[in-house]
Image: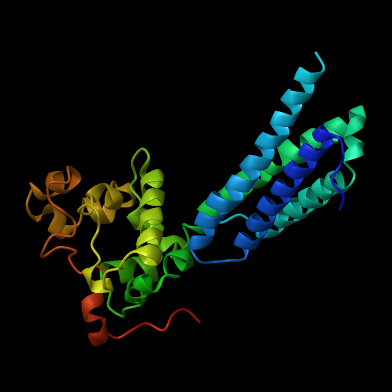
Length: 68
Length: 210
């Protein structure tokens, strides 16, 4: 996989990678019946998804501010 | 009840595939349609997955199997199958006075505002103690607060067996004291035998429904 030369597209790619990792954690936790799965789901999965979404939103804001 | 896992799993896979498409082809977002797709795939769908996942885990955390998955709780699970109707927890479980698949949660959540939230916070503390602390021996485990009659009355209040019970009405002060939580249902001489995990080796056990 090549990262785009365009900084906005590159941020979207990073955001996507964070989201995929978060979804992977979420999917794995579905098959783990121990109570720690709930904690990992929220702490690690939630963190990765949250970071991915925030990076996407930041990309939107920076796109708008760079094109007034 | 925990919601079904398959729809959630399919949503997660579909979301991951669509995100992968944008990661490998970021140029798609240059068009208007691509921007709309990015909004759905990088914002809305992950939020929906997170919400549905949280709902799934919260639902599963209310199951009897979930509570008994830690070895500290296994004697309490065993106490549910004691072959003696005088054991309060066993009788409730075996006679389905509580849903058998949510037996622990039904009695041990507080039927008050934020009761479920408190139960979840206690659960997080249990996970911490289990992995990072020193879990007490099962017979040394105690409730955070004395058992509140409110949890019993949630089901029993107004029931004929409770309101007209001979022992409950032998003394006219008993029922009002129970209803106002001044006299515990678990008082000595009343329903005092609950889990009694310290003496399980002396008990006979019900083998369960066929």
